[in-house]
Length: 567
Ligand SMILES: Cc1cc2nc3c(=O)[nH]c(=O)nc-3n(C[C@H](O)[C@H](O)[C@H](O)COP(=O)(O)OP(=O)(O)OC[C@H]3O[C@@H](n4cnc5c(N)ncnc54)[C@H](O)[C@@H]3O)c2cc1C
Image 1 (cartoon, rainbow, N blue to C red):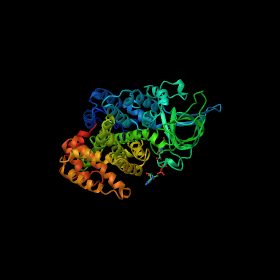
Image 2: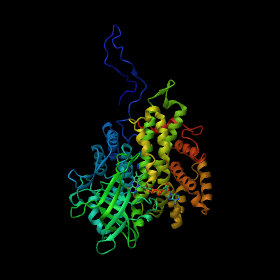
Image 3: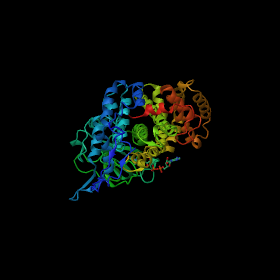
Image 4: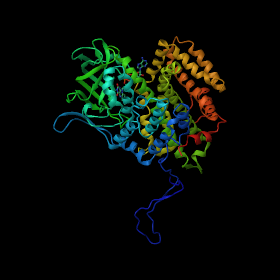
């Protein structure tokens, strides 16, 4: 690590002029920080290390330490920069006019994909089931997303495809071995020629993304109809991310209603399946990841799950992608917090380091609280995923994932912006990590079920399975007595949830409060007392109407910042 007092002297090519030999050496670079590199993303993250141990993956700590060291190196962090600076490029045809639908990526993107797959981020809970495996995978994903978020899209979809494919055992038997292999093979060739593959999903059409029942893509049977049978799909998809995946889970209308299909890029006979990419999306964020518009011109696919049950089938996948949205947004907050704190520990203004000045301490501590609260919630849901056979845990996943996806993903943009402001003008510059974090921030909230859709999903879950609310309160109430503000908050929330008559109208307010209640309960039970107290007093008493940096009096801000400092 470089000494921050070291001074870099800018020496312009200067001609000696009389006694002043270096007249053109204009200035020394003073009071400018050194970049946050060469640190361990695991060993420097106290909240993460505690969560991993607490939620059942202590066995993974040594390997997570190794991974965190690798990811924090300057060279590895640079992969994230390069994968976004050099955007994916798309060719419909090769130079001789043959249809190829080829997306070309920078080698840095491929390097990130290779690591993710070799580390099992796409499959470890399915290939190595053991207590704590979801927690360990979540920790790895959280660290890798801090380096780069865009490649996480195909990794998450590949991870999430397994529960969906398992609904169709014949397809699962032939596809899962390659889907689970720790082999990254980006070649544009048929699945039959590969050892390792990736899977994407295509639901959204022009006329509706949230309301996929409005899909117009048709599935025409090739011969016999029904689960596992071959169909040809005709229609379009308005958003298909990671179009270089080897296959896609696609929704289309069969005779019996909207159904789910597995559609490969290449047909088994080696010819190109006419799932044709029309163009790549021009995205404001998530740049390293290619997203596309496609047309299906008789594309071969096999029905997955029951005919007419397409949404119920693909929801198995969506449940997991929503969980990964929580992890990804939590990672964004962690990286933003790290960048802000690390900058302020090196930068002086008005004679003192920013990190030592009360108002900046208040902002940094508040950012750190938000980041830690996102982490405790995400890791608690990871533990629930590890224990689905337990009824309470299973019910908790249902509400906890919808609430967490809604709340954590929504909290990121403002968090990223505040972290950027801590860095000042340099934080706005494209060679800072902050613009990338900022542009990435809204994406998780919008895809995989936007905010309102998550709130309505909470309502649907409570109507269909009222026990999910009982499980929620059973979980949250274990912190009762731990903090006065929390106890008051919980009592008011319970009372309000007693009247569900106009839930849809009030869904945002109630979901905000349900999510905060769960976070606060977890903080009271698990975080150091000072941090839990700061969280409860700032979030439960003021209901978050302040800007960041308005933490109430009497909090040991320096201790909160020190805990979150990346080095
Ligand atoms: C970068 C990116 C990549 C994507 N990749 C994929 C992909 O790979 N595969 C795929 O299938 N899709 C993908 N999507 C699409 C994404 O999932 C949809 O954009 C999203 O589901 C919203 O659908 P929509 O855009 O049609 O908006 P709409 O469904 O029109 O929704 C617009 C707004 O209305 C709100 N709304 C909807 N219904 C209600 C209601 N009943 N009450 C109140 N409010 C409501 C929504 O919350 C949203 O805020 C991607 C999107 C992005 C941005």
